[in-house]
Length: 444
Ligand SMILES: Nc1ncnc2c1ncn2[C@@H]1O[C@H](COP(=O)(O)OP(=O)(O)OP(=O)(O)O)[C@@H](O)[C@H]1O
Image 1 (cartoon, rainbow, N blue to C red):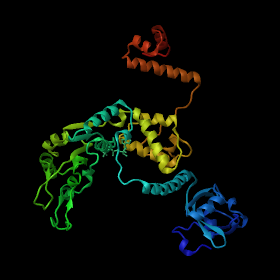
Image 2 (cartoon, helix red, strand yellow):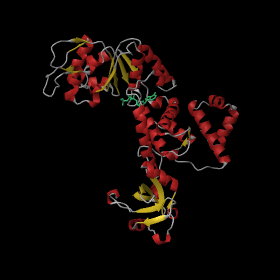
Image 3 (tube, helix red, strand yellow):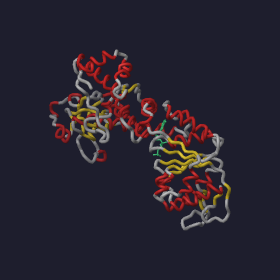
Image 4 (spheres, protein in one colour):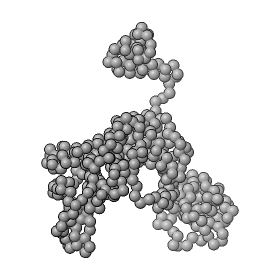
């Protein structure tokens, strides 16, 4: 029998089987919750579907959880080995039939997380991006990569601008990686994540006893740690106004003094700053120092948003599918054409970061080798921010062809500002034929 310590908070009941799957005991709770008549049951597979004795055996030995459908109700079961060489299967979660997909994905997530943990342990601690790893073949991204690579050669300050999630940090790392400072450290600091009171000690460091709570050995700041390397200031717009002035002095004098210190130390660092806010506007509003703004503006690299480089969307999606295939142990090979269409028409306000999370979500649900719209638009777990595309009803071939002809003519006329000769040329038909069709379809 199940011992008391193995009972879960909500007791849905359990059953006990021998190694051949024959039922030894069915608990009263199980009969009640799942509407079962235990006297009529002899083998577990009369009541529990969509699992097998083999799966139950594996779960008992690996502490895994089993999905099964008990009298038409999807549920998760925990399996224990029992002393009489059989198994106790305890229901730990019971769901509505309509939520079976969610329940399965919950189970997959759990297994994937376990696998991810193992993988993470094997990864190197620091990860540095190179330009080759910044994926994209659109001319917009190629141009900016080319410029950034040229800028890498020097030591001048670089300001990376662009919407959130466009890849500014990747560019900062790639610039460092290609620069003569590549053997030196790359020290990132996210200005949005540091409390105002800690900014100066984080940036400039402190000497022993500089303030109450300062360690007895003192501590170098990020600027000092970046010696002979690159200091990357992400979200620079969030640097407190007072610190902006002190930081400007470092940029000009190339010297720092730790808090509570007396001597000044020469620093040799390259500054790369990034922002997704319009610094000029912040300057006009008096929130960002103008002198610092111009000091940073030696070389500005604008990283284009994803919606302006649609050619990169599917390429990046394929890369993320490969990455998650490795991470989750899946074998997804392609994206269904309807999903591709949806992705190409969506605006991606969160840019590449959003695309990556989007793919990750689908990869948690997908079954088989193709990622489809159904992996994203689950009946009970839709993205609130995404609209499921409405599938148009398929018409007869004749009607579909007519509609396609009408929309091609309309598009040609739109693209040529109503110039019928040019539109006919674009469509590769005679002008007379264009007039005939326009009159037939009543087009203006
Ligand atoms: N071209 C790219 N190729 C591959 N991965 C990319 C690319 N661009 C961005 N990413 C990925 O997108 C995510 C967001 O990138 P990153 O953090 O560099 O953006 P960001 O512009 O610095 O964002 P924020 O302004 O919010 O700090 C990261 O996971 C990054 O690896």
